[in-house]
Length: 387
Image 1 (cartoon, rainbow, N blue to C red):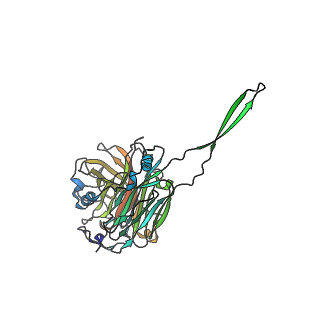
Image 2: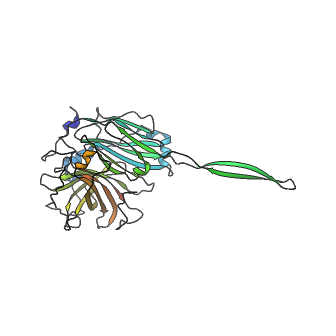
Image 3: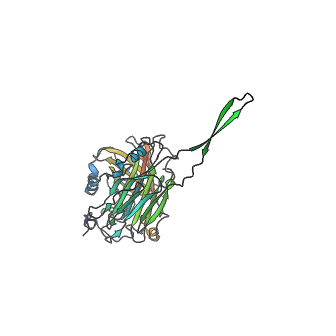
């Protein structure tokens, strides 16, 4: 039996789900207990917490997180691209299968496939949840191609990948002529013309049996989409362009659902720009005192130290790339801000969620960034383009 079918079940009741998420828009409302949506940050404080908020499932997954040793990193050509400040630098995170662990979804799906870039190089930073002996990356012989074997059932697999684009330098054409005066003296005249370099736009092609798609670099720079497949699986695509300056950004992912006490819970991971788990997220969502959809939470580092508060809003809207079944799930978008211990906003976050009546099945996938050049003020954040 495949190990994906033997993962421990969370100690909560499991009910029937559609595409892993509820088809009901009913919201249980504000959570009860130590946290709520009427306080500024839901009752959370900046004091240290137990690692992983004392959640054994989060701690187990964080312990298994490891960097992938891509053989192409030893190539001098790749080193030159990584050090070239003129080269384009992007990161792409793809997760496929059940985006949140669902023990009821036992059908095996073959997501074996490839990722191809038309010009440049691809570097694997992480292979997400690849099971030894079942899922693997094929030997890399071409810097523009990644191929893999992946089967999913109750959970998901994925890849975290850097994309490097060589700069295009102008080409010149020189013409030399001579001019002579009446005394026979000569002057050399050099005319230099800049030639237009006709290069096709870079494309990144994701190909698997269940789903394939081609992305432009412009799309990857602001990529935030979840594709719901008709067979009950989904694929999350998130990406951005990386600045050469050290301005932090990354991803967040986890569960968006209801726990066994009937509370609306957010629980998951805070990820670096290369997909490494660097912290944990704990929060809740519902309607605030103005009856608006709101979420709030706290981010801690791996040891439990305070990193940030998060707060924002969310709304139901299926992804426009969804299959037909994607329009029957309780899914949508979320947007918010990142705050320090003094409750000052210093960054933004946004992404997609899919709600379930239990923790199993519901999920969120998104991106975060710190604003290095300007503070996160009203009206200057959370644009879908260029996040």
